[in-house]
Image (cartoon, rainbow, N blue to C red; front, side, top):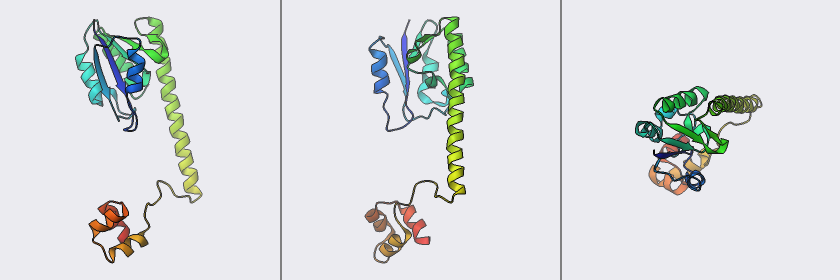
Length: 182
């Protein structure tokens, strides 16, 4: 029986170390798989670490992860991945929920919670889209503001090459070309 940990973080600014610390203080981990800077919107099978973990696990193993959303991008993906793991004879423990999927009650709880998480994610996207629509209707600018005004680029280009302009202003060559046309 092998104990396997799976970790995932969404951005390059995040680290799996908090998750690792959380699991290693309770469990003796034999193998670790991770996906760093991989969005939760990516299906489990499309993540390198997750698919390697799925290929590695075998009957009698226990997969431990900190949260339900590590197992898939939405309710269906989570449930499909859990079914695949259980078909292989793998037990799943989700520590922050305190759920061991060896029991029917654990499976029921995970099914409900994955659907609630999916609904919350959808509501969050609806609120963000509504905010963008309101800003657009009010004529407010969307997206990140300009880091450099076109007039500054045009002035610098009077004496500098494109590459030197980009370097001196801390922007890319493509941005220099785009802004000098503006």
